[in-house]
Amino acid sequence: MSERHVGLLGATSLIGECLLKQLIQNNWHITAFSRHPITQSHPRITWQQLDTTNQLSINSKKINIAVWLCVAPIWILPEHFDLLSAYGARRIVVLSSTSRYTKNHSSDPSERKIAQQLIKGEEFVQTWAATHGVKWIILRPTLIYGYGRDKNIAEIVRFIRRFGFFPLLGPAMGLRQPVHVEDVASACYAALGTKLD
Image (cartoon, rainbow, N blue to C red; front, side):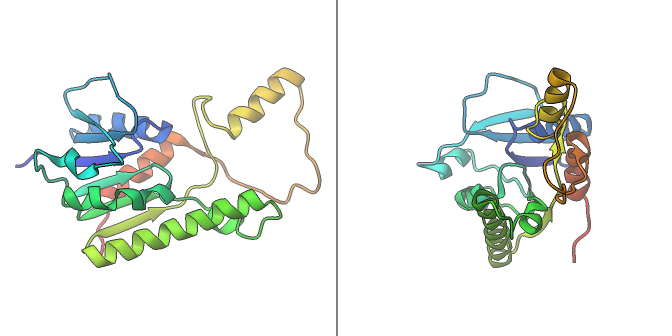
């Protein structure tokens, strides 16, 4: 039986770190991509530094990676389509966000911009995948938190610890259900084995 191999974009993100642990525990070999040089080592992880000027040189060994996870921002994924094709991608699990719906009509221009980036990113993924015969799954979690490293719940906790309260301004209509980063990573991992038509 051949070794299971997965490519991971966004490997140094909080979700990426959680996924690395799950993939190692389940005996996957991971080719993990980062924009920055990585000094960490593990026998099941091969680190590759993303080179935006000549991405195809990354696959100089001509290895095949059919299965991919992308937990980097979805709007940067189109920059790496040639990379995925060079590695022979046949299936990809991509992380997006419910913000594509909840922030699309926000009064804040920066939130509307994020929603548009998410929408366009999803459209690009679906079009590219259909053109290249790649099966895809897009997951859309809400607010992701965990280990005090997020910019959502962790910021609220820090504020409350410092001041003893947290202010609510206005009617607080933007209700969200936070989801822990480990649960998001577990959903991404589970999606790798989901049967698609």
